[in-house]
Image (tube, one colour):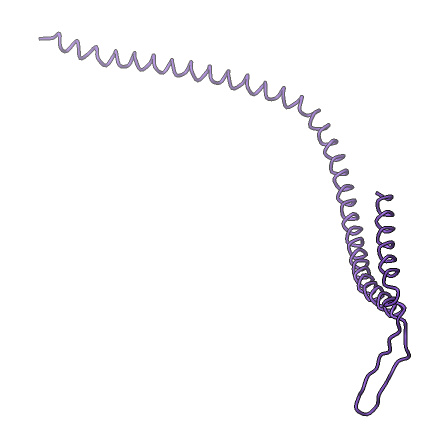
Length: 168
């Protein structure tokens, strides 16, 4: 890419030189500028056309450089502001990472305590399950006893009715 760039610049300069060489009577001719203001008549000394083209080229180059430099200064200010913003955000990120690290450390300590108490909780839960099963068995036994008593009471209440039916 670098060689291509050099070749393009060489071709451009060669083309400009060719134009100047083939039209040297025009470029080596002299021109004088004048202005008539009704009060005074001003004239410049005769200047080669090549010098006029060179002066116009330099003026255009300086004018273009001014606008490019102006944009660069604006961008430089913007870059400084963005870098300051980046630093403040980075400081905030660092603070949050430290806070997260401390919370993780605290959480791992809590997890260790929970894990130790988790064994106690598991045994306690199994004891509660055993008590629940025992109470369910007791409830079923009581329910079956109540059903049996109900059957007995029902049977007793129906027997006199049957006895009354037998009596003529």
